[in-house]
Length: 216
Image (spheres, rainbow, N blue to C red):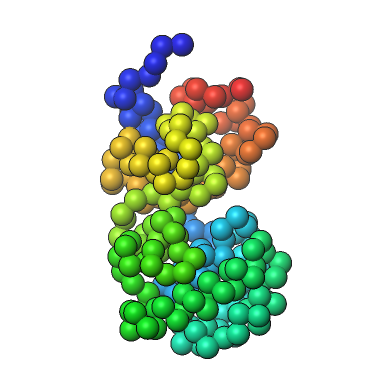
């Protein structure tokens, strides 16, 4: 099979985004949040855990500790009890408290507004920072590459990178900046509904004609 040119790969990537835009014109984040702080905590908790699982624990979590001031004073063991049903809950509980404390000590109680500053918060990596910048502040600095986006990028052969960070850079080179914003939310929905891990529904997929992996 001949190697695909970068130009053709870019055209395919744009077509993927355009079709996703038609399928999910109003895609929204699946996580429930109220403000930049609760969004940051919710995304922090979602690492290696489903959004649905996070949404089950955050109502009580945010009822008891709704902001950085209250969460910074929380006992990590108490938070762990509330979020014990999600993966790595002890580490995440410590990160919740540490994140809140850092927001108070270094940023005057406000979630920072830059990618670099966000990634100084405990438990916050580039994926979380991308989502907070995008959804809380309306600033699009990149594409949040979670499990679904990583898998689809590789299945569509838009990247062969080994990790999410490098995969993001591949996508940023192919997809025009004006199309970055909805990618994460749209591709997550598509990965859950159509291109399901281990059982993709290729016969129903509107990307089948431009997906090198369709039917495989």
